Image 1 (cartoon, one colour):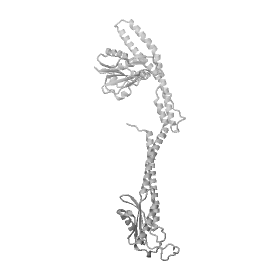
Image 2 (image 1 turned 90 degrees about the horizontal axis):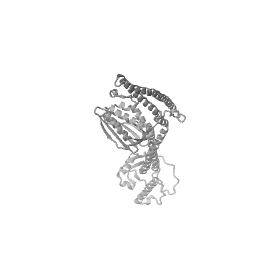
Image 3 (image 1 turned 135 degrees about the horizontal axis):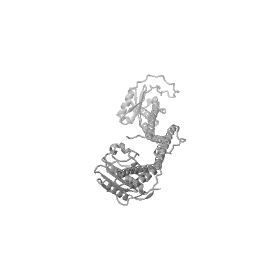
Image 4 (image 1 turned 90 degrees about the vertical axis):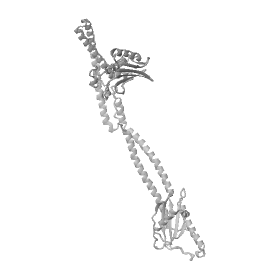
Length: 505
């Protein structure tokens, strides 16, 4: 089962929350900016629709003296100037296309932009817009203008058109903002290309697309750092828990530098460490004291049995009983010696008499014992001469004896033993494998526990009290190495002993 990271979850949730906020803010801001630009464009467009003709200088000649062609030319010039003023009003960094269509009261074209002659679709949209607007009735005149010195030229009455509704229409090439107005004698439709607005909004959109992910990244990094600071007491707890061994039970977490929310948790944890330290100290002291106290009487008892055994008649029943008693005393002495070594290992006081040990030679000696004790087993070896380490020879012999003893005791009938030893850089690896019944997973996890003997079906006929492997691993660790149970295929068991070639002081 894959576990999730609480710190990563905080960072992702913070980024998701900030992302939702930024995206919403960006979308609202984009629409607000877009609407503001369209409103400004509409205001300018309405301003031009409300005054259909530009301010031109007075004519030099009365219209009755102008020919018809001259009048048309003059009219077109007026609307050309009108369109030019529109273009000037909407001039941006890029020229904004503008379409102008002017009709008279009889729907006759008075003026149209040059672009409308080729753009049928745009022309149709402007005409459609004009058709939707009714002709306004005559309205009250504006206040009369100043007296005209030329009575033959009378300005036409100024009539306010009905306010028009501006719409956005989409053609095949672009989007246009269209407005129209009708006067009693003229109809005007104006279309302004939204290309400039779209370009500005695209720029703003690109800014949002760049800034929002950047902001999310900063939020995620900030949330990661903040959560790391918040979880610092948890990391302290984890670090102390990792050091909770017999040698590290004196570790405590200071409360003064901790947040209030974690004070109770740390207090409970420190109290637990205090109880564990007291319990381990008592247990270690008991096993060490018991081993010391029993060592002397057992030694005396063993000596007396050996001397008495030499005085009785050979082959007698008394000699047999004394031999059995001596074996049990020796076995009890071995148990006391193991308990004493374990208590020293727990206290971190296992002393090593370091010499150069030829492990190849020790393995050859163990092979001779195997051939003598279990001649029915097939033995395979794979190691070279000259594999030397720095260590305590007697303790390393005890480790190898335990491994070979287990390989013999837990082997199958007519089974086999494999011994492999090789050097990898500065570490020696010794693997001892044997044919055996499958070890259940529950036993594999506890095989190095003290006094644990595993499945009774496998250990019922095997002597031992469950101290050998635990002591062997403690000896290996005292040499800065380790002893592990390998993950092997079914039908075999393998232990690997790793030792540094040279101990570092």
